[in-house]
Image (spheres, helix red, strand yellow):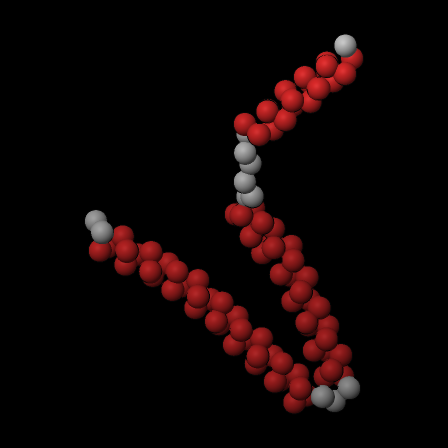
Length: 94
């Protein structure tokens, strides 16, 4: 008797869980990374750059800074192309 009630309650719970599929909140994940993780990584890079500069490795600091700036430019360009593409698709298929 107890076993059948346990099986019935387990099946009821599994059917409830299966009936309500949940997805990943990608906007929330992106917002979390942009607001929390990115500033921490930039601060770590800044500390590394200051440490190198204090040891006299100015050329390495300038090279690393240039690479970081070019990387940010590529990320901004990709985001811009996404919005430009969306605009062009909306313009063509009106």
